[in-house]
Image: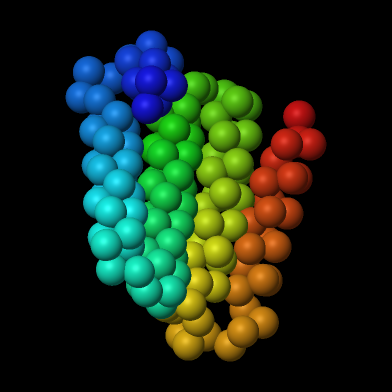
Amino acid sequence: MILARIIEIHLLNSKIQFTTKLLIGLVSFLIIMLVITSIYYNSSLIILITRIGMYSANGVAAFLVLIFYIRLIYRTIGNVRKKFILNFMGILLFFIGIILDSELLQHLLPVYIYPIISGTGLLIFIISQKKD
């Protein structure tokens, strides 16, 4: 949490400290869930809590990366901005593919679509890294 606070205040020049509060909330939620599982030991409950924790942590990480890239796009100009836009599009497609591939949303599209979306996003990201 200290690292998130340092990044938020000094690197992003933010005065709101949204990330730090969000991490404190997630850690508090995790501690409460661990206490509940220690009181009521049930293997399905532990699996459910782990799944919820992983989905929320992945969502927060994806959100922070996307916010970071959006801020970089607005702060840069020229070729660097174009490179960041391509990077952002690649990462966004990659995250969309991963989110759609989760257990909750797998029934929306055929199974072979999600790796294609993730692979396309990864390919765009790689190509944008090589672009000069």
